[in-house]
Image 1 (spheres, rainbow, N blue to C red):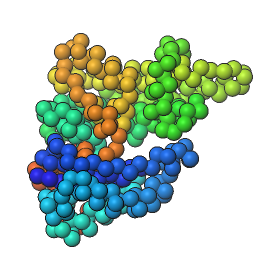
Image 2 (image 1 turned 90 degrees about the vertical axis):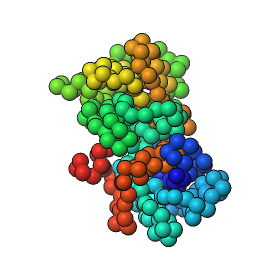
Image 3 (image 1 turned 180 degrees about the horizontal axis):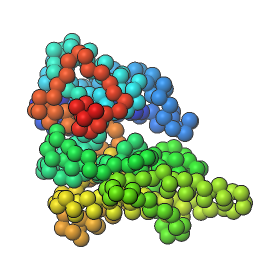
Length: 339
C-alpha cells in the first residue's frame, strides 16, 4: 500500500510517499529555519504563509521522485494534530482537496504518533509493545506503546518540554536559533560538571518531568554573572545544562522501563537527535540487556515519511476521516476520545 503523506505542523513543509509503513519511496522537506532565525524562533503567521506557498511544489516533487501519479496512490495521510493551528490547517485542507478530487481515503495522523513511527523506517524489525521516550520542542512524554494505534502516556512534563528548555536556555546564552541543536554541538567541547544545576522531580509522579526550574536556574546564573561583570564559559554552561536535562530524561525513562518490565526502549522526536541522550540511553540499555532503538538523524525532526509510516497502521486500524476533518492545536496522543 502506497500512501502520500503530508506534514505541516510547524515550520517544515513536507511530503513523502511511503509503502506499507516501512519503505520510503520519496521524502521532500522545505525548511523555513533560515527565515525564522531572523526572529529567534518560529513566527506562526509566517510559517502558515510559507506552507501555503510550498505545499503544492513539495507534494508534486514527492510524487515525481517516487515515480507515481496521484491516481497510483492508495491513500492520503496528513498530520492533523497537535501543532500550530494555522500551519496544520494548510496541510489538512490541502490533503482533503487531494483526497476528494482523487477519490482516495483520507487518513488523519497524530504528530507524536508519527514521530514514534519514524523508528519503523529506521528499524523495520521493530514492533510493539515497547516503551518510548518522545522528546521534542513542544512535548516530553514516556509512552507505553501497546500496539501501533494503542498508546498510553505514563509520564509527561508538567511545564516546559525538554526541547523548549534547551531553546530558551540557549537564547539566554546568546546561542542562535535553533538553540537546542547548536547547544548540543557547543556542549561537546565543555565541562559537564562545571556548574551544579538542579535536577527537578515531581512529587508523587516518578515518571513525570519538570524543566521550568532548571531553565530558570540557568537564566538566573547568566543574569547574576552579567551584574557582576563576570564572563561565563558558554561551552561549560551548555555542557552542564545538557547533562542536567539528559540526566532527568534518562533517570525517569530507565525507572519506567524497569518498573513496567519493558524489554525494548525507543526514543523519538526532535531532541532524540541529541548526541548525549543517544549515548546515555545506549549505555543504559546495554547494561540492562534491553533492546534500544532510535531514529536515523534525518528522521528525528519533522518530516512526512514518518507520517506515512504511522498512516499505514492508522488505515489498517480503520482510522480514516471524511471532509469534516479539522486541525487541532492540542490533542492527546490517545486521540480525540481522550479529550
